[in-house]
Image (tube, rainbow, N blue to C red; front, top):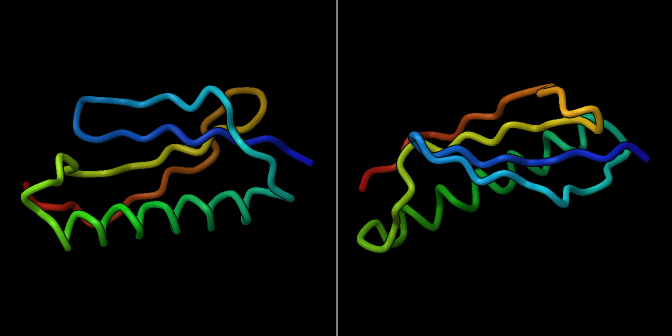
Length: 78
């Protein structure tokens, strides 16, 4: 099963995923990235005073380190 990594970018900051997860394919990995972005967006909207997230982007990398897709969420306000 392919291994994918999810790097979270927020403005100029990047949190690099060094562990990753296995998914049956790119589609399943992208669905997970979208689910996570939706959760982050919802949390930021529910408590904007506690949110430090601005524009969240998850880059999905494959096992070779190539960025295969980029998922964007709606920007949140700070």
